[in-house]
Image (cartoon, rainbow, N blue to C red; front, top):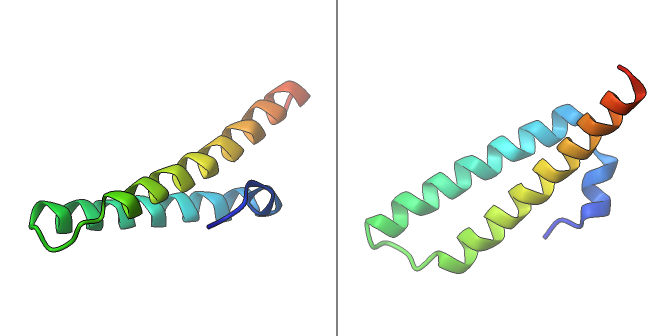
Length: 70
């Protein structure tokens, strides 16, 4: 599990890539769950929370850049 402080050390492009990977993993788990292959509710919950953390850090950076006038 990724800590928020570790995410803040990454660059914006790395964070976007990480969010895309997490989206893909959630999608795959959703398909597996619908097919009855796995009971992935807990794993899916963890992935969604990780994605939310990544998106939060990206949004913080957007707001900081806007405040600086970039």
